[in-house]
Length: 422
Ligand SMILES: Cc1cc2nc3c(=O)[nH]c(=O)nc-3n(C[C@H](O)[C@H](O)[C@H](O)COP(=O)(O)O)c2cc1C
Image 1 (cartoon, rainbow, N blue to C red):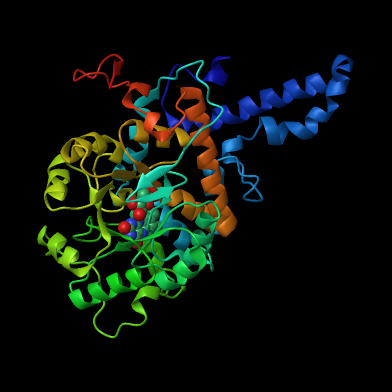
Image 2: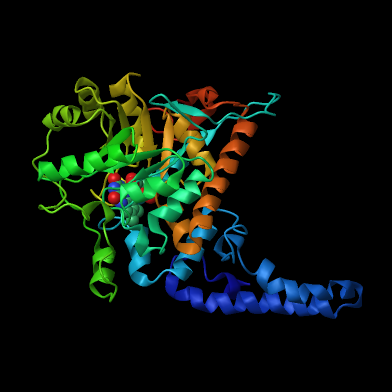
C-alpha cells in the first residue's frame, strides 16, 4: 500500500511515473477479476466500455461535431486538434506569462451563487436593451481581428453564426473581411471596433466605412498604447510559412494605414464626437478614475476589458475591476465586461455584479477554428442554455432580476476571511 501511495505526502513529481503504472495495473487486475467471475458475466460488455468511459474524462474528450460538444472546453480541445500551431497560439495565449489572462478566469471562482427556491421560472427573459436597441441575449461576440487565420469563412462565418441566434457581433478594425462584407451577411446587429490610427484621415475613413455598413455604435479600444508581449504568438508566426491574413478594412484606402497612436489622450473623445453620430463606447477601462473621466467626457458606454490578458501583464481579472468601474460610472452609462467568460454561471456572476451585458472572445474563436459557423452557433447555444439554467435555479426570470443579493464572496470582508454578502 505504501508503495502505491508513495512514501508520505510528497510533492516530488519525479516519483509520480512509478505510481501511475501500479495504479493502472491494480485497476486492470480488479477488472479482470470481475469479468472472470460468473456472477458478473453480464458485465462482459464492460470491457468495451471501460477504457473510453471510465478511463477518459469527458472534459478532455474531443467531439466529432459542433452539435455533440458538451461545453466550451470540449470545443477548445477540438480547436486545438484542428488548428495549426500558428493559429492555435494566435488565440490561446496571453501576454508574458499569462498572469492577467489567468486572473480573468480565477476571479469568477471568488464568487458563489445564492439560489432562491419556489419561484415560477417557467419563462426566462434574457433580453437586454442597449443604446435603444433590444438584444435577445446579453452574450455578445467581442471584436477579434484576423479570423481567416482560424477558418476560411473568418468573420463571415462568425457573423452568420451570431445572427442565426440574433447575437450582437462587434467587428474588429483588423478583421480579415471588410465591415461592409460582414454586414452584408450578418442579418443581425453589428457594432464596429475602432483602433485609432495616428493618421487621422485613415481613422476617419474607418469610421465612414462603419457608418456606411449601418453600425450605430463605435467601440473604441483604448488599451493599446503599445502592443502586448505575446511571445508564443510571435514565435510561431516567425516559423510559419502562412502569409499575412488580409485586412478587409484597409483595402480601399491609399494613404498610410498604421494603427495605434501612443499620443492618444482624453481629447480623442471630442474629436470622435465631431467625426461621427455613432454612440461611443470605450473598450479597456479598468479603474474608477477612468470610468469617471469617461462619463465626464460624454462617452456613451464602457466595456471593462483587458483584451483577454493580451496587453498588460500582472493586471487584475476584469471581474475584479468591475465594481470600481461601476462606482465611477454611478449608473450614468451602460457597462459591459469581457475576459475569461466560459460558462453561463460566469455570465450570471458578471450580471449580478452589475454588468449590463458580456462579451466573449476566445470561446467563439475555438468554435470557429474547430467547426466554422456551426462552431460559433454551438458556443452561443451552449452559453445561452447554461445562462438560462442558472437563472432558473436562482429564481431570476429576467436579467434585471439578477442582483448582487444572488452572490456571496469567499474573500469575505477586508480581512479576507469568512463568507460575506456583497
Ligand atoms: C486572437 C484575439 C484577437 C483579438 N483582436 C482584437 C481586436 O482586433 N480588437 C479588440 O478590441 N480586441 C481584440 N481582442 C480582445 C477581445 O475583443 C476580448 O477583449 C477578449 O478576447 C476577451 O477575453 P476572452 O478571450 O477571455 O473572452 C482579441 C482577442 C483575441 C484572443
